[in-house]
Length: 162
Image (cartoon, rainbow, N blue to C red; front, side, top):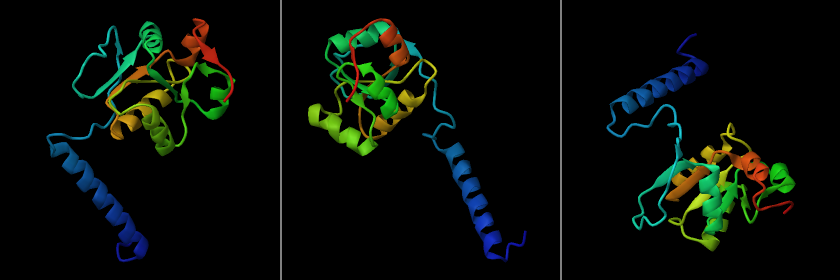
């Protein structure tokens, strides 16, 4: 490939930018991780933390039900068709991120707890959405790893439609 052609110059600039970007990340004290850390399921949580220290942790079915009973907001990270087929009672559906943020902020502030769930333990959409919400300033995020599969199997409050 000839570097004197426009395509060659473009390829060179992209490669050079990648090398500089990845290289500078290696030497930063607060470098961006290559892979997001795996969320481990917490055995207990404390909602009484009055500081606004960020929390992003995975929770079990038992903790999810406790948070539900305490009136914590749930967000379904699945696609609309799955949401309509059944979801945690009063859960918000995953919409466009900005629309979802406005909907959440209409009911509570960014420091109030939020539970995000997906279809089953293997689904990563709930973690992706939780990281997006964290990047948008939300500080108390709990990922219910068991998702809709465990919730519905336990016979906990749910609804269809919307």
